[in-house]
Image 1 (tube, rainbow, N blue to C red):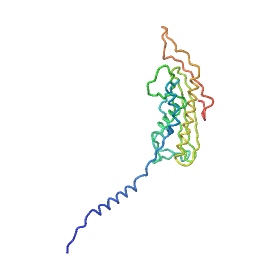
Image 2 (spheres, rainbow, N blue to C red; image 1 turned 180 degrees about the vertical axis):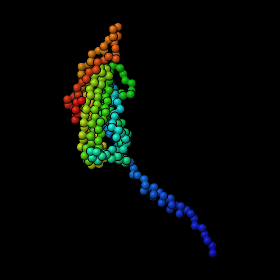
Image 3 (cartoon, rainbow, N blue to C red; image 1 turned 135 degrees about the vertical axis):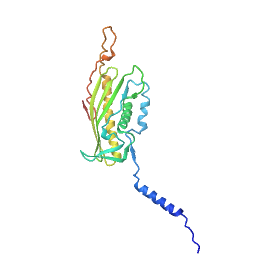
Image 4 (cartoon, helix red, strand yellow; image 1 turned 90 degrees about the horizontal axis):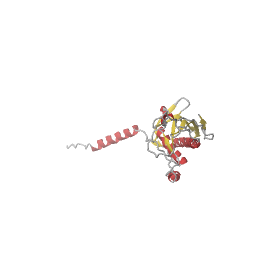
Length: 240
């Protein structure tokens, strides 16, 4: 009687399939990424024709957000005291960067200007530095998206400054897409408030000239600082 050794290819193939199935069972589902940046290129078209020689410039500093939400994963509210971190629902970049990018796009469009933060800019054009500190960035699925921010606008020429607070609470429907849209509306409303602040500061009387030293030289370190009140009509904003 002749015995034949069975080939090992079939058992090896079956073992490979079993291993692949086991790994697939352990793998997490694919992540979904969201952004607050506007994607409608048509909405930005008018800006290109108005920013060649802008009447003013803005310099939007990096946006601060609370540490508990300064991560790529969505952090959603279960209730007033409990949050949940969602591994599969993620921001395309950190929330502070998302907010800054969206604000920059909105402000340059509304004011017909350029965001020159971190870039050289021509002399003779007024520059307004915008700072935003988000104190609350809350996501309530199926309920609302909330942004509570303290922001300031400072003229780099006169040193006049305006400090305000905006609380934006946008209702949302079910689903994480709706939550992102709610935050996008809140950022848009915040940008409108800041743009109104820039216009108000630009229209305010300029501070007096820098003080002079005994020999008649101007002392650039002694410019007076003037506080300007927040605009009266700001969407969901409170003067601070």
